[in-house]
Image (cartoon, rainbow, N blue to C red; front, side):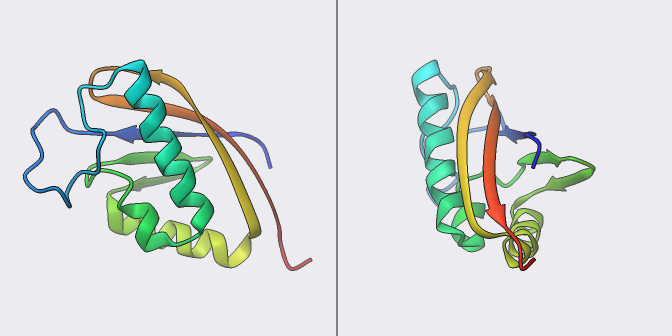
Length: 115
């Protein structure tokens, strides 16, 4: 499949609980942005949508081709459907750009379907 861009977005506000945001949290540096992307990569490769959604903030916004996903529950539902169709999924992420409170990643993945 062709590469897809996702945007991991975080709020400027301080976390209210440790469950709401998984470290590292903003403000991001090059090192912490890469760490956050790697944690998300590891979660994705587990193919556990409940685990993956927790790697993102509650206000995360993604674009996957023509699909836009906002928030953890939409992330979970999107991934469940994705992994029902895409078997032996493997993802590699790298930081494309970051600011104090946002990370954009570029990634490549492979899978096969039932056919």
